[in-house]
Length: 182
Ligand SMILES: CC(C)(COP(=O)(O)OP(=O)(O)OC[C@H]1O[C@@H](n2cnc3c(N)ncnc32)[C@H](O)[C@@H]1OP(=O)(O)O)[C@@H](O)C(=O)NCCC(=O)NCCS
Image (cartoon, rainbow, N blue to C red; front, side):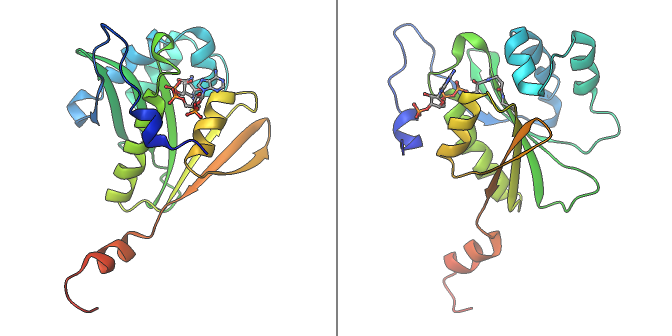
């Protein structure tokens, strides 16, 4: 298996600004819309599982009636070129989240998705999430590879592949890091 860290440490291309990876503040969530609108029609369809119009993306980004997601991004210069979203279903326990990821076409296949997945896993653990799920089209080879690198288990249902990541129980980490006997 390729080591995600090794992949992420590939040298940047000449003249290529090093991406900055970080969680977005809620006030920055509006940046998601322009990022999604910059995806090619093919990448958008892979991101959402079917073709989506600009209007659908605008509605999606309004996030009305839904819980606030956790959004992490890759900034190249001042522009958000890659995003990983962790979204919560109000009918599901708060320690389960759905993951969705997108990297703009000209920046794909150079390790940004891998770095975003590392950040998403770290944010998920910090927020007490123990199960992450990602749904993608069965022919999405890049997403399948990325999920596999991070240890996903796969199942198939109604035209989609589901990848499930089981994260370490956060209470175990607290106990493991304690200086006192538990
Ligand atoms: C899926 C996606 C986020 C991957 O991002 P990325 O920045 O290209 O990912 P990386 O460069 O870190 O590559 C991850 C792995 O996939 C492989 N990969 C990348 N593009 C690939 C492709 N088109 N076909 C097969 N494998 C591919 C890479 O080689 C790498 O594997 P390796 O580390 O063993 O070499 C990106 O392709 C994308 O935005 N696609 C459109 C949206 C989407 O499909 N989202 C998923 C559903 S939510």
